[in-house]
Amino acid sequence: MRARIGDWLDERVGHREVLAQWQRPVAGGASFAHTLSFLFAFLLVIEAVSGALLALYYAPSTGAAWASVAYIEDQVTLGSVVRGVHRWGMSAVVIVAGLHLVVTALRGGYRRPREVQWWLGLGLIGVVTLYSVSGFVLRWDQYGYWATKVELAYVNDAPGPGRQLVQAVQGGNEFGNLTLTHFYALHAVVLPIVTLLLAWAFRAQARRHGVLPTGGPARAAWPYQSVRNWVVAALALIALVAWSQHAGGAGLDGPADPTAAYDARPQWYFRPLFALVNTFGSLRTFIALGLPLVVFGVLAAVPFFDGRPGRPRRHYAVLAMLFVGLAGAIGVSMQSYAKDDDDQELQRRTHRFAREAARARTLAKTHGVPAPGGLAVFTTPRFYVARTLWASECASCHEGDDRKAPVLGPGLASRAHIRSLLVDPSAPEHYGLAKKIVEDENAMPKTEATGDDLDALVELIYAETGATDVDPAKVEKGKPLFDDGPCADCHNRAGTDASTGPNLAGYGSRRFYEAVLRDSGAPNLFGKLDDMPAYDDDLEPNQIRAMADYLVWLRTATPADLEALKPSRAP
Image (cartoon, rainbow, N blue to C red; front, side, top):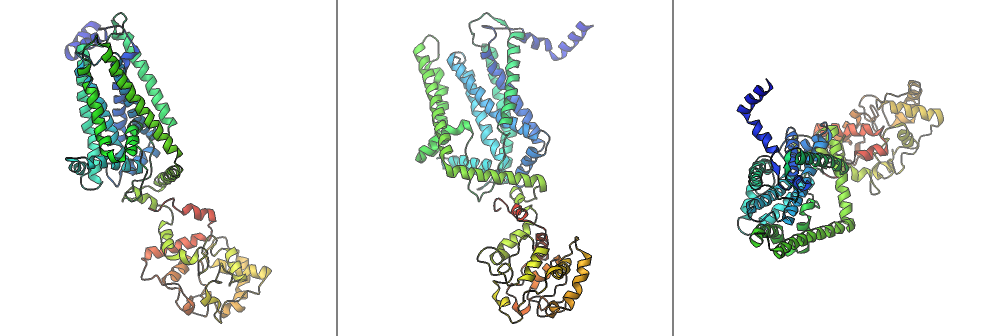
């Protein structure tokens, strides 16, 4: 029965032929040097799987790209792990591809008849680097935006159709929705198709010519080589996940802001080009675009220079060129990193951008991202509208050493504030700087009430705010003190009647503040003593309401609460 089932299955899918390939002898026997091709393919599969998982949540538009990545990073289960594996997995692919190239060169694997396989390998390395170029802009954060801007600037400055090519990729003169759509299609569709074609052709060449013998006796691929392949793949995956966690995942900066300059730095495998561009600025286009072409051209020409065995000097020359190039690339990269580490201004800017990124992600997680897109996340903090209006309309008069009106800050209309106002209304923090008020013949005098009577008056006025922690007994005691005392000579605490001082009905409540904001010079408020502009025509009703709510909130706020409202950047 088992044999019949095997025959039935083999007739339809040909699995015995596939299994027979595992039993095919490997020239020179099993070797860890042979695991690099398998590891390269394994890592590409990891990239494909992780990329497919990320695509389930990613939205390629300027309004949603950063928000979707922030959501993946901070709210999707294991989202940060998958992103980290996807990002650092590409670095692992570059490392393995480089090792494979070095090992192939050491063993002369570019010689006849394997020239085409060598060229296909170079093609795969080139495609791998394009994944990085096309992928980082998809984050639509400061890093991805500005790094891609710099890269495309090199192409734009190149002779020939550089400008037209950039405009085609961008979808216009500037970055926008089409930019993300084009790069997403390139990253998720075009490059994978090219990778599959090159990988298939590379595998076909490898099967045609076999592996380069390592010197041992031939042995079957299974289990000797296959076990080595999977052990190395498992160790690589563990190392990849561990490194991703150590590095803090894929990372995400604040939303892309075309108006805010950013110190973009390339991925480590592009660092040599970055260092050379900064060193020879006048040749930046040649170095950024021409130098990679020269390097790939020289590597592609290696089989013509050393095309057959038996010429060790040529082989040594190839290896010397390869290792000198690698050593030079490593050297200029380390120098570039050291220069950045020593640049204190750069470090300060980097830390500031890191704080902005952390705040943006916290806001996105707490409040979500508004429809306009990533930068709008900075408009989501509590009292954002009020604080923006405060900064433009109120701060110059009510904050700082140059103010000319009472301080309006934490504790406004609280018991302590009311007590301080009654005890000394002409103090600098109250009306002392408002000359029109303090110099008027009806200027408010210091209260003569003390002790329990002062407490009762404070409680009576405090009750007008609508606070829920009022002491009713003190309020009742304060009523006759107010109504039958000097307070009533200038103030009413009911209705809307005017007097020489503001009507205190609803003092410290939203209704009271809305009336002051609309027209503080109204007869039942400050009248002719008012210097504050009326905002009834300048502000929308929702803006006045927002400001009033903010002023009410100040009653229970602390300086720390107020500081927490301040954004780390201006959106």
